[in-house]
Length: 248
Image 1 (tube, rainbow, N blue to C red):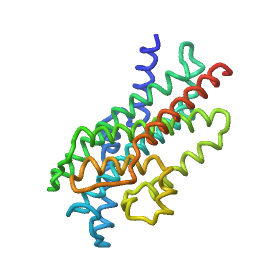
Image 2: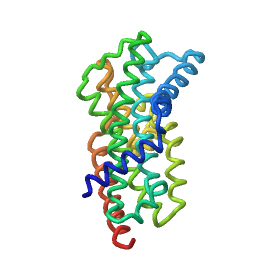
Image 3: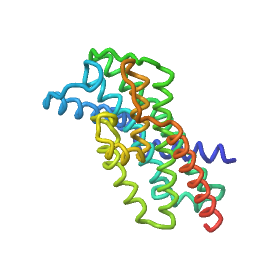
C-alpha cells in the first residue's frame, strides 16, 4: 500500500515540478549548470588564482557541486508538507509517504546533477579527474544526506512552527558564504576556523576536495563530526515527524 502511495506522490511531484513536457525537466537540469557557470564567469573576470591545482573552474566545481546537491535536497524536502499537506486528507496517505517521495526524487535529481555537471565540464574542455573517485562520490552522497537531515528537520518543524521555514531558507545563503566554496578553511585564521568548524557543509566541501586533489591536505576536515551531525539531524527529525503524525 505505502509503495503505491509513494509512487503516486512521486509522479505527482515530478509533474508539478517539471510539467507535462520536456521543457521543465531540461530547465531543471540547466539550473545547476547556471549556478556553476555564473560563479566561474565572475571568478574568471576577477582573475583570482586557484588555491589548489591550476584550473580555478575545477576548484570551484568541487565546492559548488556539493553545495547545490545539499541546497536542492534541503529546500525540496523542507517544503514537502507546505506543498503536499492537502494529500494527507486522502485515505492511506501518511506524512512519512510524503517525505519519502521527496527523498527518492532528490536522490535521483542529485545523481542527474552530478552526471550533467561533470559531463558539461568535460565537454567544455576541463580535465575532470578525481584523485579518489569512490571518496569523491561518497562526499557528494554525504552532501545529499546532509540536505536530507536539514530538510527533514526544518520541514517537520514547520508543522508546529510555520516561521521555521524562513530560518530554513536563510540557511541557504549562509551556507553559500561560509562553506568554503571560494576558499580553503585551513587558510583562514584559527578564530574563524573554529566558527566554520560547526558548519557541517564546510566539512563536506573540504572532504570532496581532499578526494579530488592529490596535492591537497587538510587539518580541518572531521568526518566524525559530520557523521554525528547528519545522523542526529535525521534521528531528531524522524522523532519529531512521528510525534506530529500521532497528533495529526
